[in-house]
Image (cartoon, rainbow, N blue to C red):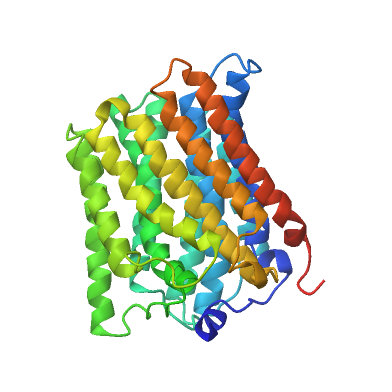
Amino acid sequence: MVETEQTFRAAPGPLWRAEPFRVFFPLGVVLAWVGVSHWLLYGTGLRATYSCELHGFVQMQAFLMSFAVGFLFTALPRRTRSAPPSAAEMMLAAAALIATAAGALAERWWVAQAGYAIVFLVVLQFAGRRFLGRAAGRRPPAAFVLVPIAVVQGLVGSGCIAAASLKVASPWASAFGKLLVEQGVFLCLVVGIGSLILPLMSGVAPPSDLGSTPTETRRAAAYVAAGVMIFASFVLEQDGWARIGPLLRAGVVAAALASGAGTLRPPGKRGLHRRLVWLSVWLMPAGLVLSALCPDFRVAALHVLFIGGFGLMAFGVATHVSFGHLGLDHLSAGRPPAVVALAIGFLLALMARLAADFSATYFDHLSWAAGAWLLGSAIWLGFLAPHFLRRPGA
């Protein structure tokens, strides 16, 4: 616990900059509602058309990226003992996330991709100045070499999608870009960031700094190789190896998390949110394997990755960060009703989405899945929102 407090002690500056998660976690939930409510509105007849691209882009590029930015903007200054994000960085990142969702809503895909790319550029310069600058008190762990690999995949993917939407690239580029932004970015971020946050959540000592020992240097090289294999798996899949590609990245992700984050063992501390994060770790490769073995139900299988993997992990980690910073440590070892509601809502949403492809009421099931997801996330945000607005000790 001492190591946890030292690693993540409060950064100086105004509260909204010292603890950026107070801004970006709620923003992420609101943006997620935009993407998820799309199916609820269509299923109930309040919207006449639907768009799978709108739903996917908003969820992956706005909702999840907002949670990622909130975590990185909060954790990196603490890890490196450096300054918090500037007001300009905070506002630019928030505006770019909103622009990403707005572009998708308007079906101006190049606008959405431009906003997404700006988010990455802000994060890249923010992280680079802290890890490479002389003022940095510490260096990142070895697995953080996957963060710039995730950024590259995001920028390449968004460029491919934008080019295809503007008719200057083939549909192949669009499909490849979607693989990168919908899977590649967050598979790399989960493995890279998970090596730091998952041991802390489980009660294990965090990893050493990159380059501190020859062992850590070798680990960094192994993580680079993992990132390259994840990228190669998308090239294979897009070139027709529809089974080999997902199976390759499922194996890489499972092995990297097991060796780097110790996920072969259940969390060493109590707390429902910790169990949910541990479950999400294994639902990610499970979804990839299912998509490879059941190609006729590929989209449904991938929602095991999206809902049970990425979504559940984002909220589980956000719960841990929020409890630790908002004076709610006494809830960390228990089962707060808001976290129970979140878990039930997400698992019901996952089951409804999987059942949709096997039913005669496909869009009704999507509507039920959206409703369950929205309710679970709304209860979670409703519980934490007053604490996000309250100063420590108030």
